[in-house]
Length: 302
Image (cartoon, rainbow, N blue to C red):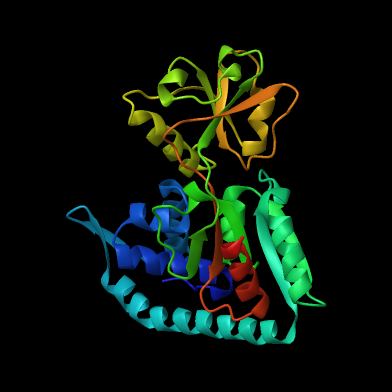
């Protein structure tokens, strides 16, 4: 046995360990944390190396705790829950003192479509309210809320639909079909509406699955139901890079009416019949700020 310096072990590592122990699965746990399986495996292996302990063993295709792993799980589970509870209480106390509202917003959304009108109404209701808005990518905006760095986020529907987050609540507050974005020189650009089959022979520009697997799942779901898989010819790292990669009349990417980063002079956006997209408003359970409740009500009624 060697000396273990617990200063090098983070609360995040312990949370990963506890979740894998509960699920008995790297796959389900990685999905919960929105990590790749190899990334979470390395984190668990790193923790085992730092502790100089084998925490898991594989039994009948399940990942189960070793005897020493079970001891640590029983010891740490309640401690971590208590820490999370106390941090949440501290934030509630802080929120009660400050008339502030922090918002996470997708950097590919049009803020004038819904956010800015709602915030103008909120300012009319709450004099002296300090509002801070942070824009970022889908996966980062989601993490900002999970880590309690913002009070509310506005994100894309496909990042929340079909998922369960223990500490989050969300509502769908925008509704739009998916749209195909193409060059105006593309023969499809003159159409008022498309069907998925109209895009069968197009070259798709997609966000990399390594960066945002949810986008690729959405893309495949749209066309798999029609009997074909879209031909992805280019992957990009961010949604606001897709428009820059429209090079030929066969190029296309999927967005919706709220998408910001398209060149109105060169690009056309055509709704796809029978599809649905939109945005969601999400917040952490237990957030008692008056501004949060007011904004939820305003958005619901808009």
